[in-house]
Length: 126
Image 1: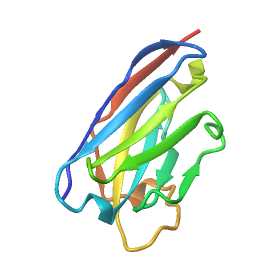
Image 2 (image 1 turned 180 degrees about the vertical axis):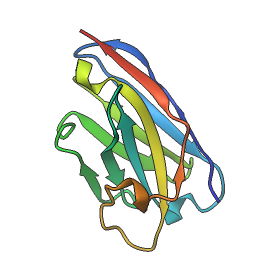
Image 3 (image 1 turned 30 degrees about the vertical axis):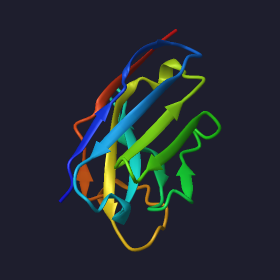
Protein backbone atom coordinates (compact mmCIF):
# COMPACT_ATOMS: atom_id res chain seq x y z
CA UNK A 1 0.00 0.00 0.00
CA UNK A 2 1.12 3.57 -0.63
CA UNK A 3 0.06 6.82 1.02
CA UNK A 4 0.08 10.02 -1.00
CA UNK A 5 0.35 13.56 0.34
CA UNK A 6 0.00 16.56 -1.96
CA UNK A 7 1.42 20.01 -1.29
CA UNK A 8 2.16 23.25 -3.09
CA UNK A 9 -1.32 24.52 -3.76
CA UNK A 10 -2.34 28.11 -3.15
CA UNK A 11 -3.66 31.32 -4.62
CA UNK A 12 -2.04 32.71 -7.76
CA UNK A 13 -2.93 35.33 -10.33
CA UNK A 14 -3.79 34.38 -13.88
CA UNK A 15 -0.63 33.88 -15.90
CA UNK A 16 1.32 32.78 -12.85
CA UNK A 17 2.89 29.47 -11.94
CA UNK A 18 2.72 26.87 -9.19
CA UNK A 19 4.46 23.58 -8.62
CA UNK A 20 2.56 20.82 -6.89
CA UNK A 21 4.32 17.96 -5.17
CA UNK A 22 3.02 14.56 -4.16
CA UNK A 23 5.10 12.58 -1.69
CA UNK A 24 4.56 8.84 -1.51
CA UNK A 25 5.29 6.51 1.34
CA UNK A 26 6.82 3.08 0.89
CA UNK A 27 9.83 1.67 -0.93
CA UNK A 28 8.20 0.67 -4.20
CA UNK A 29 7.37 4.08 -5.65
CA UNK A 30 8.94 3.16 -8.97
CA UNK A 31 6.37 0.37 -9.35
CA UNK A 32 3.58 2.91 -9.75
CA UNK A 33 2.36 4.90 -12.68
CA UNK A 34 1.46 8.29 -11.24
CA UNK A 35 -1.26 10.67 -12.26
CA UNK A 36 -2.75 14.04 -11.44
CA UNK A 37 -6.46 14.76 -11.49
CA UNK A 38 -8.50 17.80 -10.53
CA UNK A 39 -12.03 18.65 -9.44
CA UNK A 40 -13.31 22.13 -10.17
CA UNK A 41 -16.26 23.53 -8.23
CA UNK A 42 -19.48 21.90 -9.40
CA UNK A 43 -17.71 19.56 -11.82
CA UNK A 44 -16.60 15.97 -11.94
CA UNK A 45 -13.03 15.04 -11.19
CA UNK A 46 -11.02 14.99 -14.41
CA UNK A 47 -7.69 13.71 -15.63
CA UNK A 48 -4.79 16.16 -15.90
CA UNK A 49 -1.56 14.25 -16.51
CA UNK A 50 0.15 10.90 -16.06
CA UNK A 51 3.73 9.68 -15.99
CA UNK A 52 5.21 6.23 -16.46
CA UNK A 53 7.15 4.40 -13.79
CA UNK A 54 10.54 5.50 -15.10
CA UNK A 55 9.36 8.98 -16.03
CA UNK A 56 10.20 8.38 -19.67
CA UNK A 57 6.61 8.68 -20.88
CA UNK A 58 3.98 11.28 -20.10
CA UNK A 59 0.44 12.05 -21.19
CA UNK A 60 -1.66 15.20 -20.77
CA UNK A 61 -5.21 16.35 -21.05
CA UNK A 62 -5.66 18.69 -23.99
CA UNK A 63 -6.69 21.48 -21.66
CA UNK A 64 -3.26 21.61 -19.99
CA UNK A 65 -0.96 20.46 -22.78
CA UNK A 66 1.88 22.92 -23.31
CA UNK A 67 1.26 24.62 -19.95
CA UNK A 68 1.67 21.83 -17.37
CA UNK A 69 4.56 19.41 -16.95
CA UNK A 70 4.49 16.23 -14.91
CA UNK A 71 7.75 14.77 -13.62
CA UNK A 72 8.93 12.41 -10.93
CA UNK A 73 11.96 11.72 -8.79
CA UNK A 74 11.96 8.06 -7.82
CA UNK A 75 14.85 8.57 -5.39
CA UNK A 76 12.66 11.02 -3.46
CA UNK A 77 9.38 9.13 -3.90
CA UNK A 78 7.83 12.29 -5.30
CA UNK A 79 5.85 13.29 -8.36
CA UNK A 80 5.50 16.91 -9.43
CA UNK A 81 3.13 18.99 -11.49
CA UNK A 82 4.62 22.22 -12.79
CA UNK A 83 1.78 24.52 -13.80
CA UNK A 84 2.55 27.57 -15.92
CA UNK A 85 0.35 30.18 -17.60
CA UNK A 86 -2.40 29.42 -15.15
CA UNK A 87 -5.96 30.38 -16.00
CA UNK A 88 -8.99 30.93 -13.75
CA UNK A 89 -10.48 27.74 -15.17
CA UNK A 90 -7.57 25.81 -13.66
CA UNK A 91 -9.04 26.53 -10.23
CA UNK A 92 -9.69 23.16 -8.61
CA UNK A 93 -8.64 20.71 -5.96
CA UNK A 94 -5.73 18.75 -7.40
CA UNK A 95 -5.23 15.11 -6.52
CA UNK A 96 -2.37 12.76 -7.18
CA UNK A 97 -3.01 9.09 -7.75
CA UNK A 98 -0.98 5.90 -8.04
CA UNK A 99 -1.52 2.87 -10.23
CA UNK A 100 0.34 -0.33 -9.44
CA UNK A 101 1.21 -1.82 -12.79
CA UNK A 102 3.97 -3.43 -14.82
CA UNK A 103 3.03 -1.47 -17.92
CA UNK A 104 2.19 2.07 -19.02
CA UNK A 105 -0.93 2.54 -21.11
CA UNK A 106 -1.29 6.25 -20.20
CA UNK A 107 -4.19 5.70 -17.76
CA UNK A 108 -6.66 8.58 -17.77
CA UNK A 109 -9.66 7.12 -15.96
CA UNK A 110 -10.12 7.31 -12.22
CA UNK A 111 -10.90 3.63 -11.78
CA UNK A 112 -7.51 2.74 -13.24
CA UNK A 113 -5.78 4.14 -10.17
CA UNK A 114 -5.42 2.30 -6.89
CA UNK A 115 -4.46 5.01 -4.38
CA UNK A 116 -5.35 8.66 -3.98
CA UNK A 117 -4.14 11.62 -1.99
CA UNK A 118 -6.39 14.05 -0.12
CA UNK A 119 -5.91 16.88 -2.57
CA UNK A 120 -4.52 20.40 -2.55
CA UNK A 121 -6.46 23.52 -3.49
CA UNK A 122 -5.31 25.68 -6.40
CA UNK A 123 -7.08 28.99 -6.92
CA UNK A 124 -6.31 31.20 -9.90
CA UNK A 125 -7.62 34.74 -9.73
CA UNK A 126 -8.39 36.81 -12.81
